[in-house]
Amino acid sequence: MTLPVLFKLALGDPRESPRRNWPLLLGLVFGLATWIVLEGFTRGATSWIRERVGGSIPNRIRVTSAKTQIGPLQLGGGLQPEAVEACKAIDGVEQVYRQAHFPGPCQLFANYGDEHLTTDLILEGVDPGQVASQLPNPDRFQDTTSSEVPAVIPRPVLDILNAGISAHTRLPNLSEQALIGRSFRLRVGSSSFAPGPAIEIKCRIVGVSDQLGVNGPAVPMAWIERHAQRPIEYHSLTLELRPDADLDQIMASVERLGLAAPDLDTANRIGQASLFAQALAGVFALSILLVAAVGIGSGFMVKIQLEKHDIGLYRSLGARRGDIARIYLVRALSLGLQGALLGVLGGGVVGLVLARVITSYLPKGLSETMVLFQPSWFSFLVALLFGPMVAVAAAWLPARQGARLEPGKILRG
Amino acid sequence: MRGLTLRFGDGPCLFQDLDLQLSDPCWTALVGPSGSGKTSFIQLIAGLERPSRGEVWVAGRQLDYSRDDQLSLHRQRVVGTAFQHFHLQTDKTSLENLLLPLYFSGLDLTEGRKRAEQFCEELDLSSLLLSPVRQLSGGQRQRLALARALMNQPRLLLADEPIGNLDAQSARRVCDFLQAQRKLGLSLLVVTHDDLLLEGVDQILRLQDGHLSVESRPT
Image 1 (tube, rainbow over the protein chains, first blue to last red):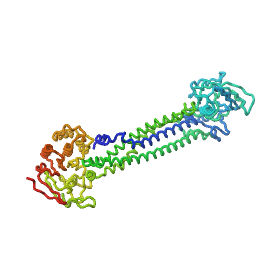
Image 2: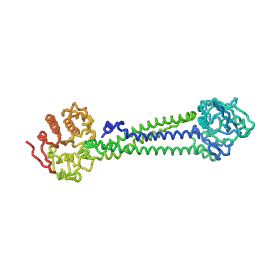
Image 3: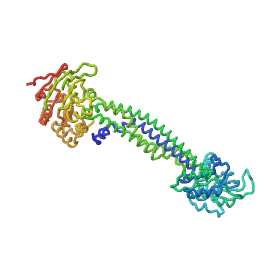
Image 4: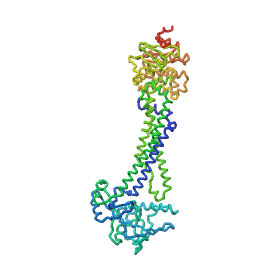
């Protein structure tokens, strides 16, 4: 039997229309759509958490002294200029950016609507290169001569601020665009815990960056160096790597210097958790597909019973057992492809709609930067392969049984 | 055939130890009372039933009932079967039904289409070639089933009551059609009680009480 004939006999039958086959399609579509949705949300959440922890700029590692670090808290141990030079000397490191706390207390005063915000904080100093690529106008962050000191807000802090605004006020959330150009006052050298002589400065926000960790607002390192009363120790260094750099070798060099990359460890742990979540999503989708396969198998059994007469006729006209089996397997393949296409499409649409609904409940500033649903090409490919595979596997036994029917017995009635 | 025996399950033998040799080409009629096993006899030769015992040789080759592929090839190339109950696909057109045997034998479909048109013309079915079979009358269906059995140009036509539902004129047309095929070397084993068909056969076999006997031709 030639291929065109096989397809004609398998799919040319009006009984094979999707309208008639929808009960068999349903399980496949549901299983595959579930996979697309769960995988997409797992990836979306993972990528969001990763960005918040390690930032979105590739080929960067943040290193700290290998002392105890619990989230944003680091217990002791600053880095000296020698560590900066040592890191610059590591093969594969293109640039080293320093980040330090201002060595003294600090207090922030800001207004938003009728709300007044006063908080003690740790003022950060960073090399401009660390955040430059994320600022709409990088030059403004270099300028420390004007009366207003340029400041960058860490992205996670903006998220926390927005969560607070949502929970406690009726004010709209703060987006990056809304923040740029706004200003706040800093009292440097004094806080509610350590009152003392202080200078008061005005800061203008020039951007938001995910390169700063969960810290206070950051001003240029040069300003910190100029105003610090005692020597500065850097709490972390951000190494910018060449794209072809060997990460393992660099990490070995970093460890030899007595430094650690806690963000990298966290990212690895997040990666493992994400893989586990994806595997769980896969198992869940597979269990739905298993039920769908049982349905398809039963459906094909019924089909074979209903079409027994045609099978007998084909066999009496010279069809081989293999021809009969192939007819039903091509039908299953077609059903699987239809299920896969509808599942991928349905999963994509449901995922997008769900993501939109969820983000509509999130603070505005947060939802703007958050792509919750990020399905991968891999998941589409898996769905497109699995749909037909499951359908063909489910129809295998019924097709085999149909092929083994005795034509004489069928035609005898 | 030698020692051909057929029984279904644990039931009694439908026929037992039948021996028969037919020349090629040869036109043979099979007669016998209802339930004597005529249809089963034909299906055995078509390879659609498996004998309990014995062997069948067609066109110089023994049918190996244990090899399904060989039986399929036998049905594709050697025999054509016109069933008593037609077994047509009623939701398909006459042409689609006629082309079905060619789908499995892999014979040329263009030539097959021409043959289908020619058969339909000879059997007065031309105007119904593209009509769904459900629109055809019983007689038209019977002629169509006969035409389908000949689409693969078999050496042996097995026909079960091929003119049973036909009026005299149509029956005559079918007989003429078969005679034309006979000139091309077709052998025929036909189950019939119709004198019109019996007139044209070389010999008549009677199957009764499980035994096969050769009867004289009607004068």
